[in-house]
Image 1 (tube, rainbow, N blue to C red):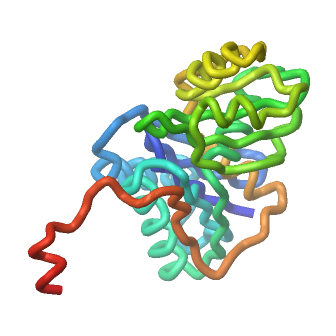
Image 2 (image 1 turned 180 degrees about the vertical axis):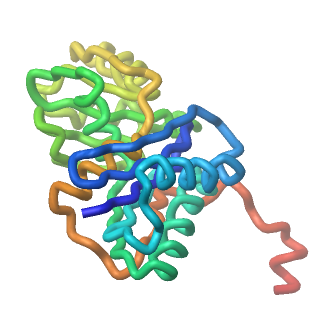
Length: 225
């Protein structure tokens, strides 16, 4: 099976091709500029894998949560490529991909763990996972204090850019939570492996937004529409 995996949902841009047992991947940290960097990156991994787009079996993309614009970039690319090539589509939330990436980077939680991403405005994107990286709950948009109250008692590890916020909120409630991997991002390489492991394909991909976009239409524009 030949899988192309795409992610632009957060603070990195990544693309990967999984062909049989061979994995070809590119990832670059960036806060903006995903749209400009993305398609050249896709072209690079396809060329390195020596695979034509028409030969792809599955195209996978993260569906969010994350940046409003970033989430749409990978999804739009996946939809367009699937339409042209006839490949099937696979999508999964970005926190589940981060959970698998954390394990690939050496995390040994010894039990359930949390993926916590700083969603700004005093909120977190939160997912809870078992020791094997399988999702138990989430994704949620939740305040750190509310998250700390809701965590299972056996959970003692959190990863991601919001892990420290979660650990600090937990400490105020007598919870011992260790924050790890603060720079963790979703990885297209992990996404490709999730898709290969038997994820169900879908007719189309839809963004997962846990709150409205920051940009608001101007009142005059609304009145004219």
